[in-house]
Image (cartoon, rainbow, N blue to C red; front, top):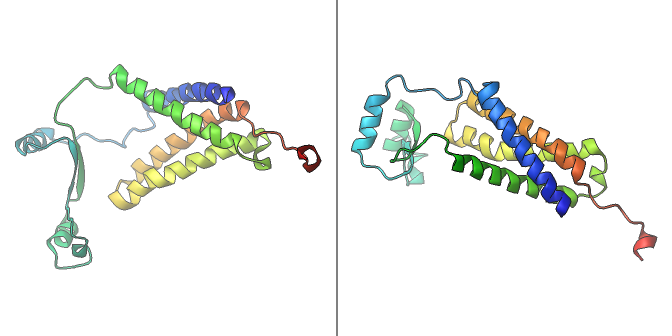
Length: 196
């Protein structure tokens, strides 16, 4: 357990360092997020609606029967466009405060500890170092598909945006996996005679 926690702590720092590098040094995410050409009228329109913090989409329906009805208002709005999702936070605040980085580090530590715990439970398939790195990479692939892939498919996130975020996740967790794989090993197999 101690080795898992040590590996998780180091891996969390490595992953955090990779994220900093991919955003701030390599500019890997350049072009994935764009400013509005004229944000003022959009901002004013949102402020006038007196919205609570939340996620808003257009078009929207709670009646799933409308989705298959070509005459429904929802379908007509969907066909006509625009289609958008707004992540709305009413109150402003400092950009990327220290608390945000601390939370990210804590989440990365937790995620790395989960991966380390899973790796420690594997049997003979992960005896070699590269096999253990591959195990961590496999979990990263799984995480990419069920998160970024799902948003691409269901929420219409752009392909370029999705691809960059997946690459970012895979590279970062492969780097973290190098440490996890070095420190966390499955238990040694015992022969049936020794177990008896």
